[in-house]
Image 1: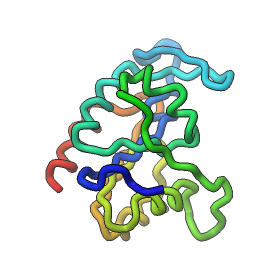
Image 2: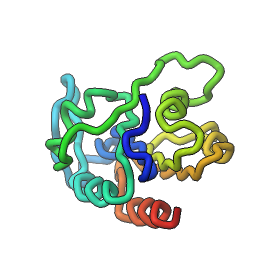
Image 3: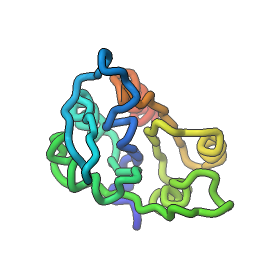
Image 4: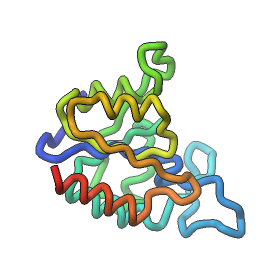
Length: 164
């Protein structure tokens, strides 16, 4: 699998905790639409559609989620995307070679030289170390799962992409 548009930086987009929100109390439920995905309810952020539309101008959007191909089955129509996005497939048992289960797939897709940003609600020290060691510009944006991708995140991402 290789990147589709090498002129733009890649934006790796997680779903759970970025677009599909959780961890909020019933009295603090964010704006969104409930959908059922494989029998599980997901609250899809109302702001996510506008945010992803804005980010498409500066990035090649790529699903980087445990949903894998299922993201394309459910999300493009809900989010107003023009069609399916590339998605990463993951080895669920990456072994000791990678401290985070998504890193091998990210490296295979982006290679070492393509700038990328990664939006996820679960970026740990291993992810930060990987980003710091990566030869190409790399930005990690960690979201709160009850809030997801917000306007400040979008401003940070677009500012970073345009400064490349």
